Amino acid sequence: MKITFYFQNAPVQRWFDELSQALPGAQLSAWQPGAPPADYAVVWQPPQQLLDEQSQLKAVFNLGAGVDALLKLQWPLQLPLVRIDDGGMAVQMAEYVSHALIRHFRGLDQYDEQQRAGEWKMHRTRLRSEFPVGVMGLGVLGERVARAVAQFDFPVRGWSRSPKQIEGVQCFSGEQGFRDFLAATRVLVNLLPLTPETQNIIHHGTLAQLKPQAYVINVARGAHLVEEDLLAQIDSGHVAGATLDVFRTEPLPPEHPFWTHPKITVTPHSSANTMRHASVAQIAAKIEAFERGESVAGLVDIGRGY
Image (spheres, rainbow, N blue to C red):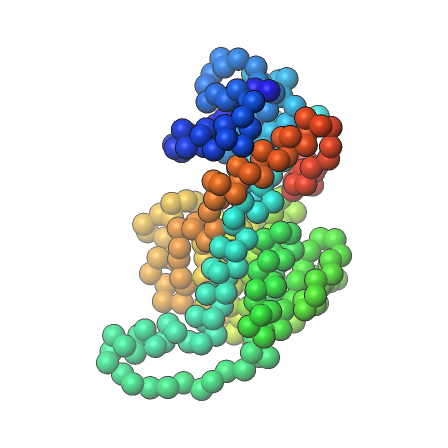
């Protein structure tokens, strides 16, 4: 079995060491133009040339949950694309979203400002019932986030393209379900895959349907959010603020208004990183399943984009 690997600017040898331990019979090599044919490719944001040259591949394994960058390439429809189901990211995402939610709910930014001003002042205790949380996207990451938030006794809603059932979460689906979901949400968490249908989904009309003094947490993709519309909704007072980890242009340009906006928290696409050990174990198990002719989880529907 031959595996070609592409992850630009990554510590390739560390990946090779762990993949070799997990798949002792495999021949591993770093892809470069003109590389010999391989059976499988393990990649993160590969160039089109890799797909063009490696036309005999049995499957491609993406080192992450998001596959939008790969689907911008000319993808052979018959070539299976498999994403990471978790790779250690779900717990990190649950931590990040819970922190952002609680920081806003408890008014901790206000207390930071008061500390800098030397001001001792308590604020009214707010009720969790007044802060229903809506999670858009109920895949592996979204479900973990929804369950984590529910543990803090917030009302939790969830919306997905197809119907889902999650204990402790009020689930919505479809177009009418989306409107009902937004109307029932005050804290909006975005974990949708990026597809042509979901691009720009958080726009003026979407934000306007949220409960007053809404809050936005975007940890999916920057292209989901119309940035100007968020700023306008914050300025109008309908949206109280946002925590944003992903952006249309990354790194975020120094002149971007998000950097200095007092009601927006910016982090550098760091909400959840792929953990090498967990990812290698998952990829190795899936490659072995492919070799046995078995089905695998995480197979991407190229037409739907996830």
